[in-house]
Image (cartoon, rainbow, N blue to C red; front, side):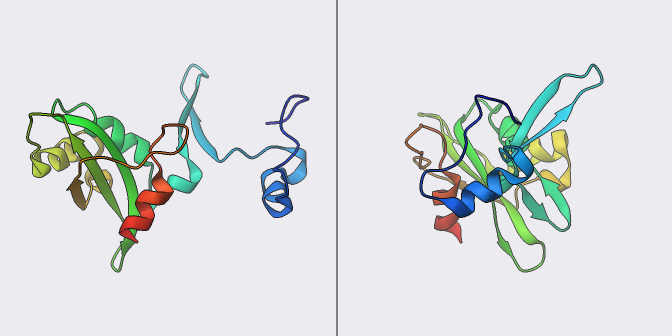
Length: 147
C-alpha cells in the first residue's frame, strides 16, 4: 500500500524500514485473496505461513477450523522443524474449562474440511497460549518454545 498516511519507517531500524518500504510501497506482510465478486480477504501473515512438503499452509485457515470445535477455547497453529517435510503443522490448543479434547478428533476435523496437507502432525493441549502486548497470540514466542 502507499499513500500520505502510511508510515515512513521504523524508528531507528533502517534495515527493517528499507525492507518494508521497498520501491515506495509499504509491504505489510499480509497475504490476501480476492473472491469472484472482487472482495479482498486477508488470509494470514506471510511470516506465519508454514511450508510443509512444498505446500503453503496458512495457519489461520487451520485455526478457523479447530476453533469451531465446542471443546476448544483457543488455538494457535505454527510450523515446527521437520526432517521429512521441512516444516510440520502443529496446533497448540487450550481446552474449554470442564471439557476434554480428543486430539484425533481435531485432526480428523481439519482433514475433513481442509485436507491432509493442512492436518496438524501434532496437537498439544496447554493451559494458555502466550500473547503479545496487543493481546494476540505471540507466534514468535510459541515457535521458540517448539524450535
